[in-house]
Amino acid sequence: MAGFHVMADARGMHVQPTVRRITIADLRDALRLGAEDFWAKPSHYVFLCLIYPIVGLILTQWTSGANAIQLIYPLMSGFALVGPFAAIGLYEISRRRELGMNTSWRHALNVRHSPALPSIAVIGIMLLALFLLWMFTAQSIYTSLFGDQPPASIGGFIREVLTTSRGWTLILLGNAAGFVFAVIVLATTVVAFPLMLDRDVGAVSAIETSARAVMANPLTMALWGLLVAVLLVIGSIPLFAGLAVVMPVLGHATWHLYRKVVEPERAQQIRRPM
Image (cartoon, rainbow, N blue to C red; front, top):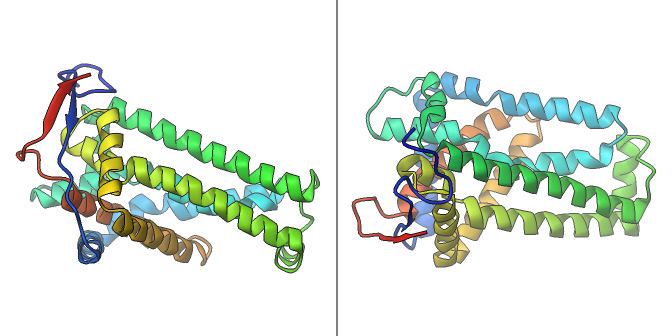
């Protein structure tokens, strides 16, 4: 590792890569390329991502056993908040496949040798903090409407949510709060991790570049965020098992989205001292 650096690149410079405007056709192409990366060696990628359905089942069992049924949905939707960091090994596989290199699943672990690892860890911790804040917010909304008493059963809780005014209030407020968290994550990390793997620009530049990419493509990026949310929900419905396919496809597709949004390094970019 060429020196410990987090906020700036290895030379202490703040890099501003050029971002492009993209279209819906680019989103479709990114998903297509992501699916191609997945199907190239699906057994390797499913192995990598089995952790997602396994963790999902464990979390569901934990919340049910701890009388915290009201947190199952926030936990499921929370995958979208930590997904950009959790998929970092998949970005590495797509990067290597793009370069014609060996793409054995073991190479996903090569991220630990990346000079950008400190910056990656910092933004990963930021996402974890957002996830915990989201869980606290979800619990606070529930408590304000239903009190401190946890639901007695899943069936009873679902009936209460769907057939009472406070239940519909919980749905509206919870989803509104979740939308805010999702927008924050999208705006700050949509291309942050692929960018750091590719160039080691530092955490500040990675977050800033993601924000500029979203501002340059507000409608397209909003559609991307919606696609990610819908696919994660679909993957979560059959006992989270679908996440073993949805997560790697989205992870690979995110790498290709990065390639479409951010100009290659050889293109002109601004560098200035931090």
